[in-house]
Length: 202
Ligand SMILES: N[C@@H](CCC(=O)N[C@@H](CS)C(=O)NCC(=O)O)C(=O)O
Image: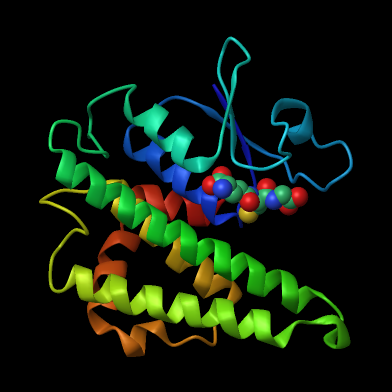
């Protein structure tokens, strides 16, 4: 299978982390949807990345769908709990929280790319506030635990790591580590994983 994406997209990083943690063979192809010659719109009608193209040419899109599909391909490890419905809900909720941080950070980034007189200050504040609240909630939920949910790594950890890496990239001035030392300690641990390092390297 082939994964189309870019190295800066947080949604792509989440999916890459899933594929790497589960050791699922794939080809990672850099393809920015807005660049001339991009294949993305031809495979994904929404024109978005990540887009996972299966060997029969089926295109799987939207990162939660890709992550869930990839998780069913093997059990090593299981990243979305299967039998325990409450644990499953919590992992998916963590993913929604992380994706929401990404969504808001992408909006803020989009605004910042516009000429100063065209930026919507209210929209920037709205989304930055949502990120601030979501980070506080994440820190509260995490507490001093090693993993976001349960006693081993799950999609929750991979999604949250992707969101924080994106914040580090686009909102370097945001001192989330100072505000949430427990999140910072958790992030330092997860950042040392080979999968995370691989996505940061390329
Ligand atoms: N909900 C989607 C969001 C994907 C998304 O918005 N990706 C951005 C890149 S970060 C994109 O492809 N935007 C289209 C563009 O840049 O033209 C997912 O989780 O996969």
